[in-house]
Image (cartoon, rainbow, N blue to C red; front, side, top):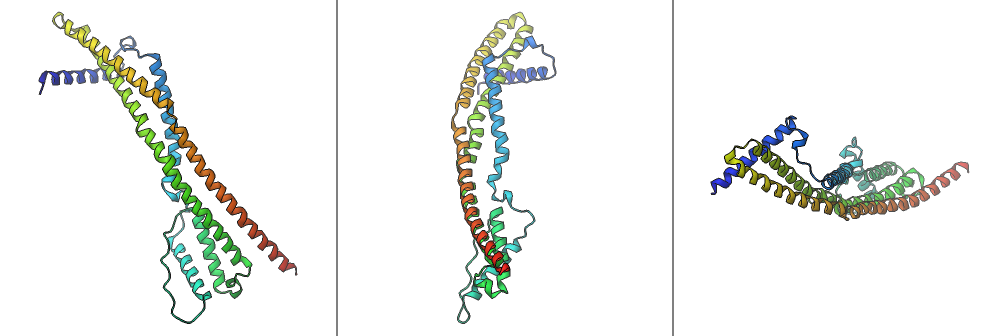
Amino acid sequence: MDWRQLSSSVNKGFSTSLQATKERLGRVGQDEITELPQEYKDLEARVDALRQAHLTLLKITKVYESEAYDYPSHIQESLAELSVSLSTRFSSATAGGGGAKAPPEKPAPTHKTLPHALGRAAAGAAAVLAAGDPQAQRGEGGLAAALGIYAGGMEKVAAARVEQDATIRLNYLHPWQQTLTTTIAVAMKARQAVRTSRLELDGAKQTLKSAGAAKQEHARLEVENAEDDLVQKTEVAIALMERVLKNPEPIKHLNELAKAQLIYFAVAAETLSNTQAELEELSLAAGEEIRI
């Protein structure tokens, strides 16, 4: 082990920490703090704004990591189970009597989204109405039939919702988070290296001021080395920050978010349009029956 190198590293670290403490406590004059290039400071501000923009949108869009972001919190799972039970019982009743009955199929996993909840509620309500109404069991109009139509529409909307969320997680959310943890994080790390190097330089300058004649030359060389190091690290940080600001990927990822939403809303709009048209026919027919 090179003890001299280790000792130098420890001394440099102590000097940097001491310099940072003095600045934080206001014990260092502004003229004693090395001024960084204006180009560097401008890039810092722009990268900070870019990072904040990512965090602001991420804070909201992280809801897509869990499909239950619009699921009614008061719903009990027993209601969903009741809906499945009633639907199974109704299907068995309408399939005819006698003979051995096949065991009911294992229900699919219960998705927790608002469209799924609406579909299950409508299907369950239709099953309840149909259980004691032979006419409703034959699908001859009425509220049970309307609820069945609505449930079918919601099932299609719900499937589109699940597909939208999966697409958003894959094509937007994960890449968006990755930009924060890779390119932006690398630039932030390079900026921290610049700050450390600047503190080392200013600490070395303070040491040079107080150095005795015997240590003047060594202290001067330390200042020169620190100046070279700061220039090099500043150049690296500038290059990395410029790369981050010119990165086209975030725009691509935002486009993927909007595209997934567009597809979902288009499917939902078309499905609901067809569903509403069927419901309107039933509504008009029910009104005609009353007038007859």
